Image 1 (cartoon, protein in one colour):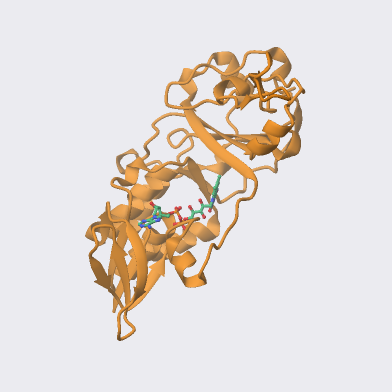
Image 2 (tube, protein in one colour):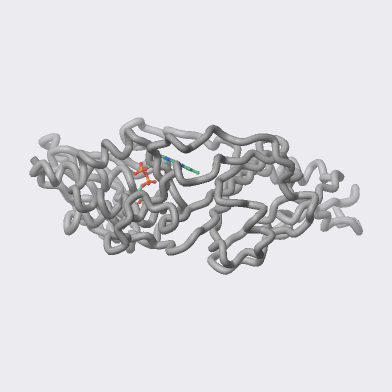
Amino acid sequence: MRIIVVGGGIGGLALAAGMRRHGFDVAVFDRDTDVAATGGYHITLDGRAQAALRELVPPEIVEQLLASASALRLRAPDAFWNRRGRLLGRGPRLADSPSVDIDRVTLRTLLADAVGDDLQLGRTVTDIGRTDDGTPQVVLADGSLRRCDLLVGADGTHSLVARRLAGGPTNKPAGFVGFSGRTTAEDLSPRERQRLGPRSGLAIGPRGAALYVGFLDPVGNAVLDAPSRRAAITSGPTYILGRDVPRIRWDRLDARPQRRRVTGRAAGQVPPPRVERTSARGHRTGRSRQRRRLPVPCRLVTGTRPRPLARRSRHRPR
Ligand SMILES: Cc1cc2nc3c(=O)[nH]c(=O)nc-3n(C[C@H](O)[C@H](O)[C@H](O)COP(=O)(O)OP(=O)(O)OC[C@H]3O[C@@H](n4cnc5c(N)ncnc54)[C@H](O)[C@@H]3O)c2cc1C
């Protein structure tokens, strides 16, 4: 049986690795040209995810994966802050947790190893359909066609396969925009390291805005002490900062200029929208470039060598 998987992300690669292991003829097409060039940060694999991976990928890959992962049981409990950095509470004790955190790039790289030559990178699928005799087929960006007996859509959130099968969009915007960045712990000041601690956390702002701080230490908190098998992309403790903000309705902002002054260093990291006021005759007024700041008072860290986090003491967890 010839199987084509559209999308070589976490799901597509795990499935293809399992099919390959069971002797199926499988081909995975992904538009990315390099598995390591993917975005994303760490991902938590709970006990069920680990059990599934054990069935799908060879034991040596599972071992590499665990040697490159960070055990949650070795991490301090999660922290929850309010928008001013005041500690609201802590998550459950992690001492008994079987879950592990792994860098997404590491996970994808290892899954790609398990799939081997059956993963074809730089192959964008532009359409799917059937031949005259009903055989499923995919159309690739270079115009070539590939036939199969089974076609699997693993092409993520904006899946083309799902869209074609459903005859229209299969999702709609949730009203939030998220983005993230990472910094190594050694790039932070000792004070910031102490403030964040060896834990993940969440700062909750108004209207659903949130700043996620993830802590990943695949060496210090390694699940398996097997340095030779380690494939982590991050070698030392790393903080991942992800931010969710309500999607800004530019049209409404234009109609109703923001007067509220919201402070916060995060504002400086995001290009502020231009809110233009016009007079009755349509001329710009003196306050035409009013800036709107975003509400969470934590500074977003992007790129690999960010500047230190905010130093204001009132943002320090108590
Ligand atoms: C902020 C956040 C945190 C999360 N945390 C966790 C967590 O801790 N634990 C957990 O289990 N899950 C978590 N998830 C969910 C998890 O990330 C997703 O469920 C998972 O990545 C989905 O995998 P996938 O293979 O379906 O899609 P993806 O990983 O998105 O892969 C889709 C692939 O398809 C490729 N592709 C798309 N279109 C085409 C095309 N036309 N042609 C060729 N290739 C194409 C893309 O390049 C991509 O590689 C989180 C999700 C988010 C957004």
